[in-house]
Amino acid sequence: MITKETAARIWKCYQDIEVGQKLTEDMKGAMEHGDDPNPRDPFGRQRCLQLGIPCGDTGHRMFDVQPRLAISVIQAHIANQVAALAEANEQARLELEA
Image 1 (cartoon, rainbow, N blue to C red):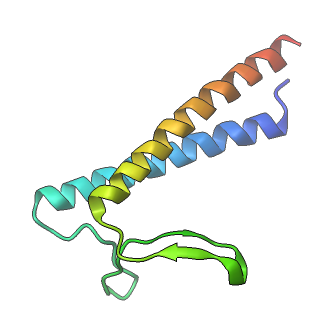
Image 2 (tube, rainbow, N blue to C red):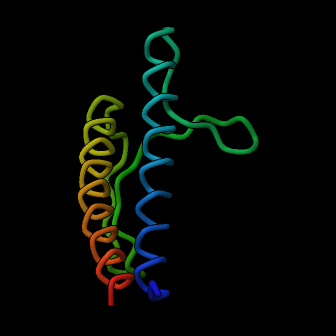
């Protein structure tokens, strides 16, 4: 039987890959049409792209990240999650054999 931890790792990898792919597709599509790829909040106001580490008072954030740079970072994250998914799948296989 596969452990909850392994199943959660697999789900998280799939979730991050799916979200990252959708985000890059949306951003690239907007850039191809000459639109601004920066997201909008629920009130329709444009929000600039940000990269950050949320750690309470000691969090770090960069504002106005260029869309092409953001796409590169997202694609690197997707690649990292694909590798993590392969490891989690192997762990699941080992757990099933045990």
